[in-house]
Image (cartoon, rainbow, N blue to C red; front, side):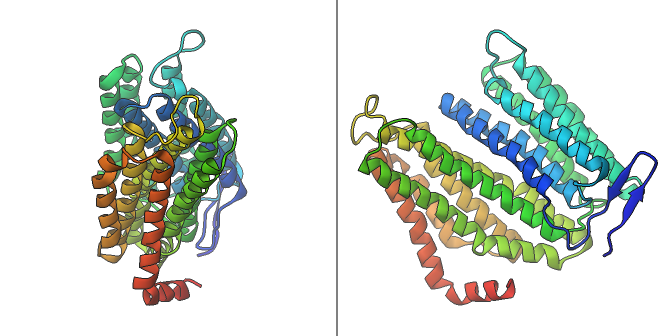
Length: 406
């Protein structure tokens, strides 16, 4: 497919082709989301309760929809050309404001601007900038323009509900956030794949691989934040290495096979079937994947704090409550999401990953009595044990997958 250009007196857009790859402006754009994910993890850490974690996941749902919108835009046009570049820089500026207001998105602090409404307003502006750039790309594409206009059916009510939620607090506020997100997500899902364009599938898959890397990077940052300025000991060093082992194992379970198979499936299809795979495998199934990583980051952060902060935590103290469930439940969610990707793309479940997910959840009440350092070590051992088992059990299949993608 050759590169095409759309020219008007005030508009210049360059369509993406099959060989389009991730641009530097998209990597720059992702830096804002590094900070946004860090802020979301901190939001949950500061309000470590079921409600606080629910707020963090809802926040992640909002951020994910913003990021996905521009990922889809980048597979249709070159976002480093013409007015699309201006839209990207504008969205970056407003998303940075969104990130700054995350700590106050649910509860405003005294003094200054009313942050919950500022958050909603900035989120709305980001979505409008995306729509403006995308509608420019659809100037001569009635099908694409039609589905873009349909997005307002969910976006309009979603923004209004979030604005109302800004003046509430507690569980009812979270309920309205969930309703707002459902209105937006379900509207796009039930609108169907007709009309959407997927010009550069390899670029699209690469974008999602990079956001997984960003989320995994947050889990590593969380380990450092958990230790903070506290003095280093051998126990802390060992736990930190085990925490890194958990993050490395999560990287392996995604990039070794899952990412390759997903990209292969996407690039080998065309038309509506390609759009369906992109929507199911990436837009929707990658959300629980990212959520799982963020929850693991929260759990690791708290576990390392228990180990390092001997002034407030006794030696050998166990992680308990929401913190340990974030670690084990987040990893279980991540494994279920990976297995769901296999089910969507290959037609079968990854049984061993589902078994480990169930085992983690079932064992959590027992792990609440294990010292924090031992907990991190056990989780790391389980993840690395899973990888070892899969390398032995599926060695031939893995070689075929790798050979096919070289």
